[in-house]
Image (cartoon, rainbow, N blue to C red; front, top):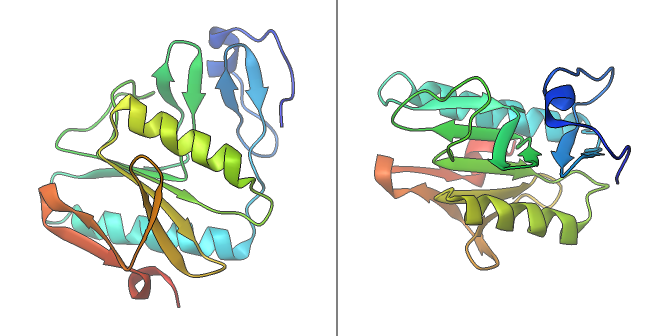
Length: 165
C-alpha cells in the first residue's frame, strides 16, 4: 500500500491529493482503500448519529481528519469524536472515539494494526464497523464483536439498527 518514500512531515501537511487523502508513516505516504457507496452511507449515518449528540453533549465529531498519532505518523480515521473540548486543526491528542469502517479491499491485518495504534495512542473507544456483514466490533487487545457499542463516559450506545438499513 506504500506510495512514495522520503516525504517530509511539512510537505505532507501542505499537500492535497486529487483523489483520496493519504496517511503518513515515517516519510512514506500510505494509500487508503477506496470507499464504495455502502461505506460512504455507513460513514454518513455514523456522522449523523454523532452530530445529533452535539445538541446535548460537548462532543466534537469529524470525518477523515488527519491526526498526529506520534512523531512521524499521521492517520486518517473514517470518523472520530472528541470530548469534552474541540481539538486543534490537526489533532495531536487522542479523541474519545475512533471509528474505522471496513471497505471490501481492506486487509484485516492492516486494519488491526491501525486499531492497535489508536488504542496505544490513548483512544478510549476504538470501533470497527463492517457494513457488508452488518457487524460491530470494539478493539481492546483484539477485536471483540458486540451487539452494542457503548460510550460509558457519555451514557450513549449505538446499535446496528442505528446505522444499518
